[in-house]
Image 1 (spheres, rainbow, N blue to C red):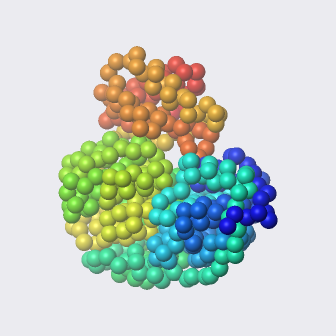
Image 2 (cartoon, one colour):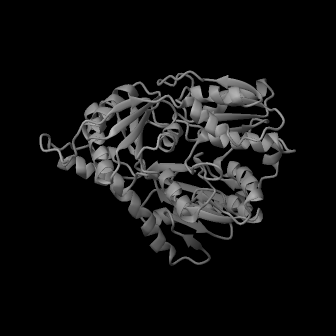
Image 3 (cartoon, helix red, strand yellow):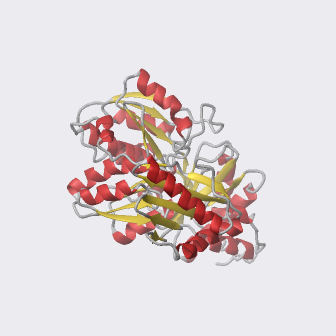
Length: 466
């Protein structure tokens, strides 16, 4: 039934309707009224697709309980039943959609953003809800064309079931010493559960959930956020260290010598193990990953596939090509091999530990086997929202007049030359451009930086400071 008693529409601040999720600053661009309207609109979409129930979870941010309560009100008022799983990491919400057999799911999370941010990650059925779906939700909310009803609301504690599922296929080997840093994020309680099931020696840091993130910001792609973990690995002479982001869907890894394994380096270790059992499988990585990852996937007997950055885009592509494994530089690792195909930092950690506990090499020794490349970090520099998506297209046109370059435009422009490659793409989540360069030596890297700078200046942009 369509709601005729309450057809008042609700308009969102346009900045919160992002490519992969809905995200804003609580009290400024995001409110309880927004959460309630998201519930009404999403519940309406679920019902019109023939669905009846939605799972809801939330992270450890101070604003999450308030926003979750308003979201549940909106969902119930649209006539869908709501299964509340309480606080936990985002992958636990994804698991809940499968485990509780719901028709969708919404996670209240600010991910790795500052403490005053919060947002919503969504699934419709077993598929990610993103891009045009989010814009459609915004238009539906503005129109006020909601379904109505009184959905039942129930609570479900699935922590034990989720932990058991992650450990279900684990093959026990030798014991390791592992340091875990939950970053005071929502994954902390699950780290406790996993460590009780995992035969190894564990040191736990920042397990207590605290939405002010008092020890460091929970973003494992930033080296300074891993310093506490590095110190603990050295102090305890541990085999490895594992860090989680604020909502537990991205992983950071430190080897026993305190060295960071970036997302593409970690993917080489994980891909080799998957391909040993599934030769010829397609392995996906995002456009920011090192060329060495694609080369190593092929060398290990796999089919490398470069794809667009973004967890929703990667998950969709995995289903399309039936890839058992995918990963991003940002630390999103997606396993469909013995798992569901969503990004889950704890499950990726368990698979890594399994590889190490059953193998002959330490993680540090494995890292020593990885190809050494010279590259820049991910460079992010400001560009107006209305301009950022145009720049890569303009650069692509300019490159048509250049010789000795090979251009991949799957996501922005990734330009391969004799020296290596450089990348320019628009961020889908911020008003910035993203660039990266990689070469085999410092001289080649300098030439790539120059080429990137020349391309940006040719289209009227000031290049970043390298």
